[in-house]
Amino acid sequence: MEQKSIKVLIADDHTLFRKGLSMMVQTFPGVESVENVENGQLALDVLKNEHIDILLLDLEMPVLDGRETAKKVVSKFPDTHIIMISMHDSLALISDLIEIGVHSYLLKSAEPEEVQKAIVSVLNNDFYYNQLVARALHQKVKHGGVSKPFFNDKSQLTKREIEILELICQELTMKQIGEKLFISEQTIHTHRKNLMRKTDCKNAVGLVKFAIQNQIVSL
Image (tube, rainbow, N blue to C red; front, side, top):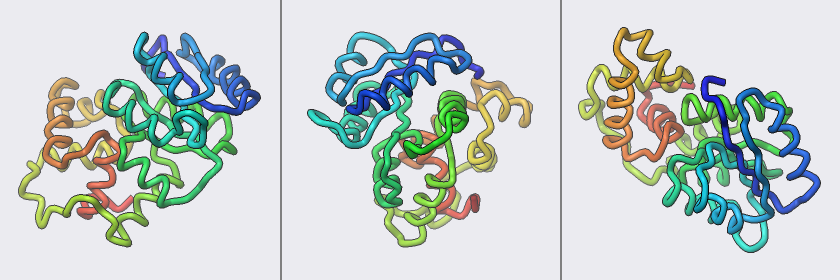
């Protein structure tokens, strides 16, 4: 992992799964601490008092479920990255969560290696693009279920912005993009902010979806 001292919070109402996941994540390189709570409201209470890098969030919980928790986290704690973990594989559901601002989605049947890979990717790239997320994004585009109109052309994006967007979709980090294009990492961050502003996207997952919608990439 490029980032050290990673703080993780797990919110899941099933005690055995929650504590087992906590023990597993604690073994990942770079993880400093792992806390766990049994519902979304308790997760929000933790976030009010300390910075959390990764929130592993169950979908179905009492008191405050995962969807509503995600909406509040995106609004109030935008620096916390959300990875939803659930038993449900509904593409419409996954697409809805991505619209809210969730950074990735894993099934509870995922292997430990994928959980670790998702954490690394979300921290470094702002999203983790697995087959499930890919299918959800493509289905959203295929059936025209978009909340914002496509650009009729790409004139609102500069050539450099399109180039950077293509590299973001390849899951390159900001540092790797800068090295590839021979420009500073800070310049890449500025271009990324401009891309998000122009496309009205909440995070890199939204940028990937935008790129697919506008045929900039065909992942």
